[in-house]
Image (cartoon, rainbow, N blue to C red; front, side):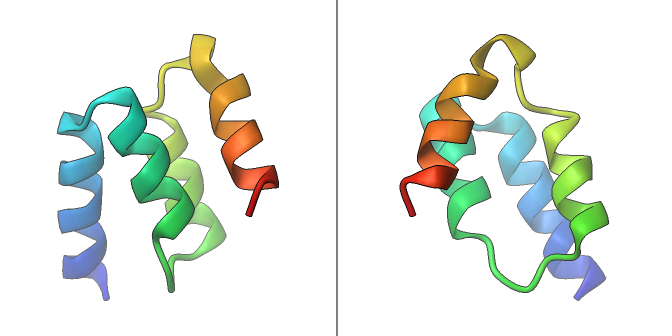
Length: 57
């Protein structure tokens, strides 16, 4: 699982904003800490867009 997370994290870091949102909202099997780690690489000024996407699921 850790290797898979590292791959997800690398993809997330290099992704556009829309791709970051897609990755975050479709990732499965991650722990709370792993989701928090991804958030560290999300542009804080766009957290409202991520929140809308998460709440829209």
